[in-house]
Amino acid sequence: QVQLVESGGGLVQPGGSLRLACTASGSIEVMGWYRQAPAKERELVAYVMYGGMTTYADSVKGRFTISRDNGENRVYLQMNSLKPEDTAVYYCNARPVVSAKIYVGAWGQGTQVTVSS
Image 1 (tube, one colour):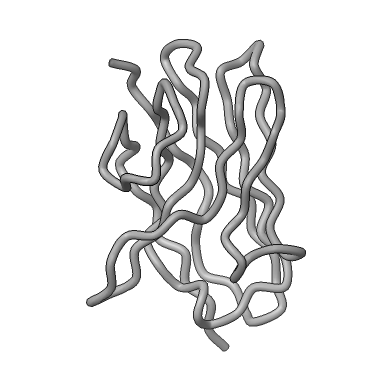
Image 2: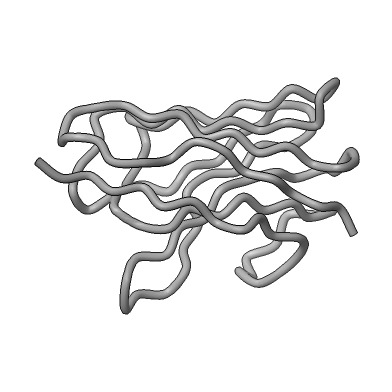
């Protein structure tokens, strides 16, 4: 199973931007980001296939952009126009196939994103 190391995150004001990065120890078909706010279920944010196809949660469409560098086994999440409701722990995920199930594949350690004035 691949190992995932995340970077980025932090505190930002509403309307601001942050960029998350995640490096995998090997190549894998699907890389994505999930998030979990306090007292809420973990939810999909976005994922990107090895060939570049992307999928986003409705709540982040038009504000977040996911991308990957296959040569570096890295995935990025550019988050713009951040809102307080984006506050959560963000987890990098890697899995061999697309699945609607949340808890599949390998997970990063999680990085806190806080949007607050």
